[in-house]
Amino acid sequence: MSGRTLPHPPVQQPASLFESCSWFYSLCREYLFRDHTAEISRALFPPEGPAPDTHVLELGCGPGFYACRLSEEYPQIHTTGVDLSRRLLARAKSRAASRSLQNCTFAHGDAHSLPDASNSIDAIVVSRLFLIVAKREAVLSEIFRVLRPGGRCFIAEPTSGFRTRIPLGCMWLLSKLSSSPAGKYREPRQADVMTPTDFSALIHSQPWGDVELQYDGWYQYAVCRKDREGLTGLRAPTIAWEAV
Image (cartoon, rainbow, N blue to C red; front, top):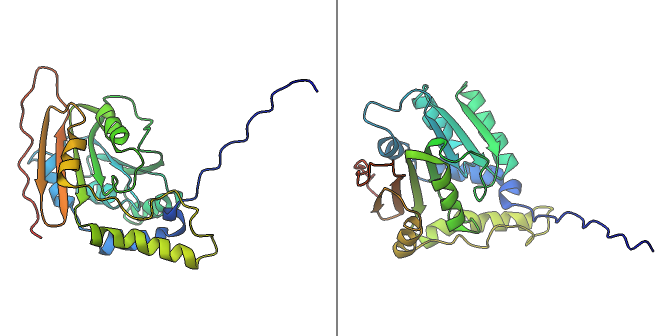
């Protein structure tokens, strides 16, 4: 024997429920989950609308719901949707193409480690992502890192454990009926809903210049502004939250 060390084979990552049940999740996003487009616009943009060439990132974009909505409403901006599921990204691209949105693109990526340069993104939208990510603080740290000084992020997370767990539970059930062996997916068995205390602690784990938290019967929200040097203490815009 030469004593030569053989290279380790690459680690096989578990499959994703969002790949095998992308069609089901897309239906939930379209018809079951609340549409926060109006709240996002008021939280992230001034009353006169976003400046030309504003770059908006949607993390965990799934079928591209908000990236497409915002690109359609504000043709002067550019949106990028990022997701780990290639099948959901294919649906997102199809959605943008069907609407002839030239200012809307999508990329495969992990919210735990974004390829974007630090201080490069104007605004970020995150909806229902923290229910399933493995390391919440790492994701929020990446959001903080890539936002430019003065940039804002909008975060929406459900508060109802029972209602929130229905989509993921149905996806696990559907997986048992498919040809793929059940129990081989990277997603948790049930969505992990944060309490208001845990949500606040997560948001405040980063040194934001300003944070506004709001709660209603089904969702909790955070609008965070990354501090601009010498401009501490600015208030985030007041948000008119949708009634339950």
